[in-house]
Length: 267
Image (cartoon, rainbow, N blue to C red; front, side):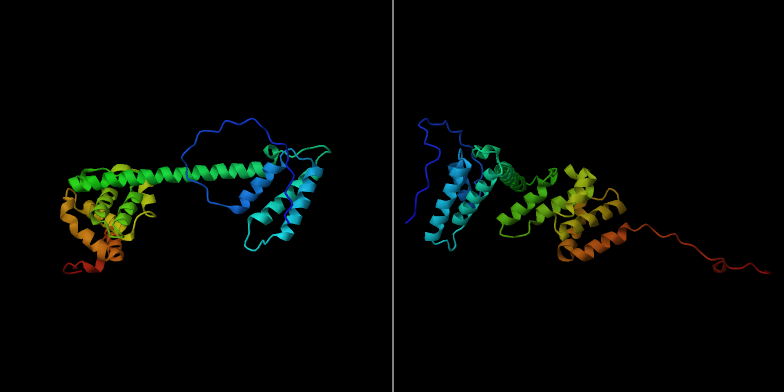
């Protein structure tokens, strides 16, 4: 038979005002953490002797309960043991206060950081979705090529590809490659162009590199005349990258040896 834990401290009759609800992503369910928090609430205000008594009851209950596959029960028992040890190391008469418990404070700080990270991820996902809607609208209007890319548009490309069930967004890829090649939008910053190497696919990067070299070799050429670069990069990205690297090599100086010159008569 399960023995109920003693009520500690006595229940209060006054009601606390709850904080307003904030719509943030919920933390994942964790039975062990739930058990530890329950123990801390029960242990608030307990002396060392009261905590020992509660631990004894928890141990008795654990003998009569099936703990197979249960994470909460062992976590509660372990937390009672930790609190008993904590109070044993304090002066007599000290009561347990989770607000001053270093373990609890560290856990709360970690929880707050995790919640902030989840909220930031949610905000970023919402931003990417909104920007993807905007890019899609620009595509439909036929004005995407006149639009400067922004920081994070690499993730927008991934979102558009996901929405299309993995279909390659050729026009978006060409838009980003062209922007990298001519340093348009946030790609004016060398750091943004360098970061793009780890954010975009090899075909897009090869297209951008090949475009940049072709534009350098033929100043003033219309980018529309270089559509073949996109086709080459999409079908043979490694070859397109090799070609771009070849075109980027500085020209070698041509030297002639003295024996190559015809000798004058009589010498």
